[in-house]
Length: 151
Image (cartoon, rainbow, N blue to C red; front, top):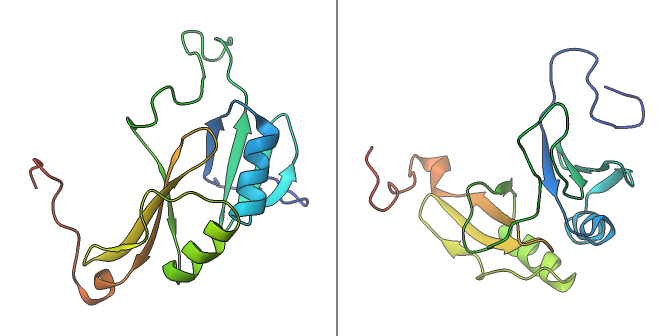
């Protein structure tokens, strides 16, 4: 990997997650100051090392030669999502207290779902973030099938 922590592997691959944001400075502060990430690059693109992964953030924009029919923009409707970040923590109660004290706004407090204890929060652009602690999973108790889903 690159010497300054930038996600550029010497071999193989590294997983990063790209977010289109309305205000890079605001999002950088959230991921660094609230969630405890490390700023690797301030802008163009903003890169935050968060635990064992990276969040890359840039403003939206129109098509480019390598994505000719794609426009990037932050979520328009935060109540409809197609993907979200999933953060696994060792102590969800402590995490909930710490991040709430730093300004994170959770949808609910942590809820015991049998397989795990979890809760959700949103970042400044409305991206959904799940925070979960495996509990029952560690003893063979797994999640119920999704409502209306088939397994």
